[in-house]
Amino acid sequence: MENARSHQSEAIMVSIEAVSRSFKLPRAGKVRALDEVSATVRQGEVVVIIGASGSGKSTLLRTVNALERVDEGRITVNGIEVTNPQSNLNRLRANVGMVFQHFNLFAHKTALENIVLPQTVVLKRSRDEAVSRARELLSRVGIPEKADAPPGDLSGGQQQRVAIARALAMNPKVMLFDEATSALDPETVGGILALMRELADEGMTMMVVTHEMKFAEDVGSRIIFMDQGKIVEEGAPTMFFKAPDNERTKEFLNQIL
Amino acid sequence: MFQDQIQMIQSITPFLLEGLWLTFRITIIGIVVGSLIGMVLGTLRSLRIPGLTALIGLYIHLFRGSPFLVQLYIFYYLLPELGVAWLQFDSMQAAVITLCLYTGSYVTEIVNSAIAALPKGQDEAARAVGMTKAQSLWYVVLPQALRMIIPPMSGVFVIIIKSTAILSVVGLSELTRQGQIASLRFPGDLLLIYVCVAALYFVYCYPVLKFADWAEKRIGGVTLKMR
Image 1 (cartoon, rainbow over the protein chains, first blue to last red):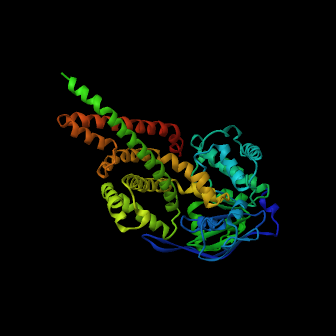
Image 2: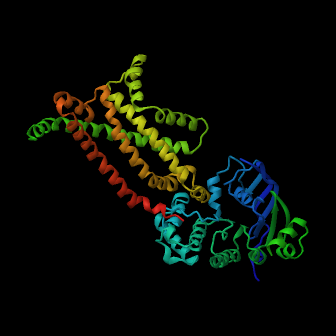
Image 3: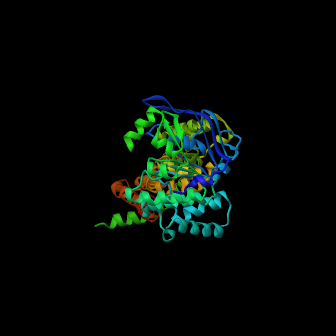
């Protein structure tokens, strides 16, 4: 299978250096969600992050566009230091597309307007330009006929397609997928994964948190396995799935495969 | 046999209508200004800025946690006693200011709750595409929160309208006060006079509630369809 690996270059797109983050939970006390995590993502790479619930994979993804702050460590995306309070986070975030588990479409806007709004507000595009780009992207994600539908009238899969189009409208350099298929009906999952695979094939740099092991194996350039806030294993999909080193990885793979 | 009553009603009607008109004007000011106060403070409170949140909280708790009558006494009798020049309120000023602040405290809480009730993902999605906090509030959070506040707001407005009856104690000739005056003229028709007064309050409040129903169906429905 031809995949994103062929697009890889040496340029580093995302660099995560010794990042830690703790949460105070009401009952469990202080939980270290990220424990000195380091990772790099090169341009064109598809890095798939897997692990059990609570292992810190979503938190890691959310620190990359500063939706989650870090306690310690340093993150840069395309040369901009995310963890530096002086950086313009809003500029940075426009470069980083994010797709959420629960779609998070703006509930008061139609599909088309969901894609238009960020373009006119953040990129200051003219309305005409934004609308034509939005229509183009709705066709790209396969639902041009749903332009005027409010999110409530769309199926989960359709909502996620709009969400992906909304992220792409900003011309992101990196796309983050936070369990993008976890809230979908089984029969819709395939369509979204296929769309993600197309993006990867076009050379999009991607960080993907998922439970879809087939996708990880086929599309991932690299797999990161997280457990209790740490990266415990990292490697090419072939190595990772066939010959994992770590005991915890073996245990996890045994349970899910 | 109802000749006397009809005559009595005819003679007090102009005064009651005058009272209703004053009640109407005062409540409009209270509702408009109070809503503006509430929108601004409710939004600010949702930002969770240390210090400011506590300060707004104090305002809400003071005004929601004490009787309107007591607040009115403080603004009308106590504050002018302090001798500060700009705290010398006449009865109309004291009434309007108290009503605006009282309304504002309720609206602040409603707006703040509506923003808090909105799924966190809405703001996150706005921030994730690069909107500033202010842009997220303006384009994404507030338009949705405003749809949710219509039903509770209409409830507050009706409470405010009825609360203005209390303003009669500082001598404002609003509807209730006009009823009191009428009852001094016609002590024998106490019941009938207050039935008329109540009817006029109802005539004012009922359309507000009906309008809220209509507005909720027209505007509010979209958000509620969220999956």
